[in-house]
Amino acid sequence: MISVSINGETRRFDTSISIAVLLEQMQLGGKRIALECNGEIMPRGQFNQHLLADGDRLEIVVAVGGG
Image (tube, rainbow, N blue to C red):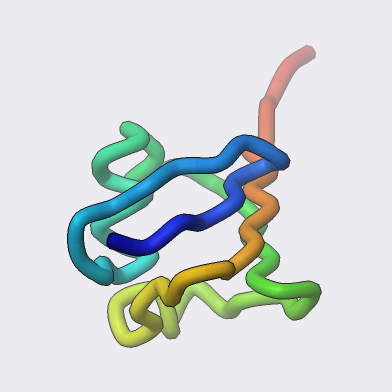
């Protein structure tokens, strides 16, 4: 089991998953987001390759349009 902090909230997973899978589970797939992993901005092109590890800290910001 791994423990990951997402926007300051701890979530636990049975196995390591990719950031892309996490975003789909959070219903954020395809949305305009900025993601920071352990203090580093994560390019969207790395979401499929980066597997979450125990202790990772994620900050996810969703872009909201308006007028």
